[in-house]
Length: 351
Image (cartoon, rainbow, N blue to C red):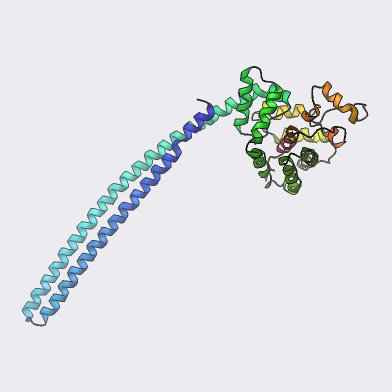
């Protein structure tokens, strides 16, 4: 059983425990209601008996002598005494029933609480084991991700990590297979994971002023117009990094490096933060030739990338794209990389 499966199994008793608590509360309410109804029926019956007796006695009073009146009064008093005894006995019986049920209910609740506490300990242990396993897996798949030019975003579920891990366990995983796995994961259900990731940015004050641009880029991406989505997103990465650091824009590499170091978590860093810090100084992202170099010309840039083992569709070279040197950049994986760069800056500001 995998760690994710053990986690699901350990948490599967929670709905059952909630149902047991609900059933106990419902039983208590039903018994209390029955006791109250019984009391009401007894009092109603007594009221009818007493009322009928008084009515009969009133009729007799009109024809009986004073001696009979005294006898009837004694009879009425005796009836009231007996009625009081019946009511008292019924109330005492009901009180004992309620006390007995309350004791059983408290005991049941205590046992349920102990069971829940035990299950919570088991769940916490499962989560800890899952995180430890994820850290180990991240170190295993990190080199593969680096070769493929991808990294795990902060919001990525463990399912994406496990997909890449499964490739690594095959022993013949290539960067191309890893790139395909990333695209396949985010493309499912018409890019549902990507849309959910972008939607989560809407309430982040760092992203809110830029959401119109980001939403337009997302629409272009979903329509397969990657030549529009990519250049729309790249400047937003630098702008958000500038806002986070409260530093002037312009030095894109240093801004992005400082932002990644401050924003991305230590968790699974070997498959996320550490890879991205390496990639931003490589031709795959922000690194490249100097602007004075002959390679930094559109007719030479493709060949220069090829010498680094990259095609234009595999390299999101910020300088080459925004300076008009890399012209064949439009690909689904490059557009996805641009969104993942934004996700690296996504942590909510403090306060």
